[in-house]
Length: 148
Image 1 (cartoon, one colour):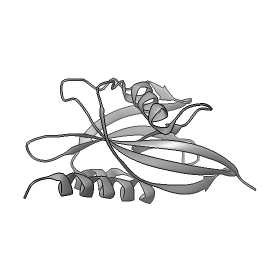
Image 2 (tube, one colour):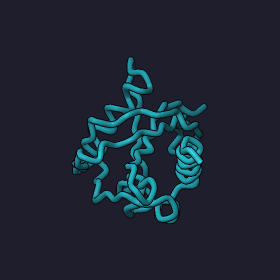
Image 3 (cartoon, rainbow, N blue to C red):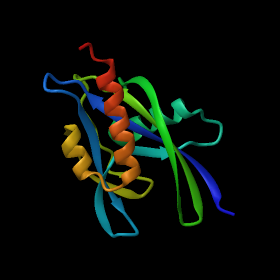
Image 4 (cartoon, rainbow, N blue to C red):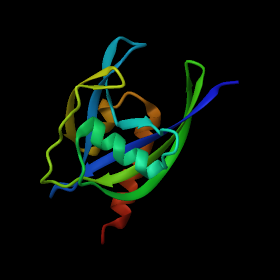
């Protein structure tokens, strides 16, 4: 039976006049030996709540402290290396005045760069279908909140 690991994922967006831009980070993937564009994601530590872990991961990976948690977007599971990951995704709004400060690495995996991308570009850049699905759902939440 696979060991279970709880993870949190941050879909961080910046409101702009042309629509939301989403934060992607370029993280090294050991199995493929390549860098891939990803959403901010990390493990919930023992004794931590989901939201507490989420805010810690955002601070550690991209240096953002002034984010506003808007919604729980959903979740998904996957197995890797005998571990079953249960991922919960959240939508956060970034403060436009706060710069991203990318950490050099995340749990020993180098982080190379970051970018703010519009939805279509982000969907093209992201490698994993689960991340794309959560991003689409977050975008739908944002557009359903807008007055018509």
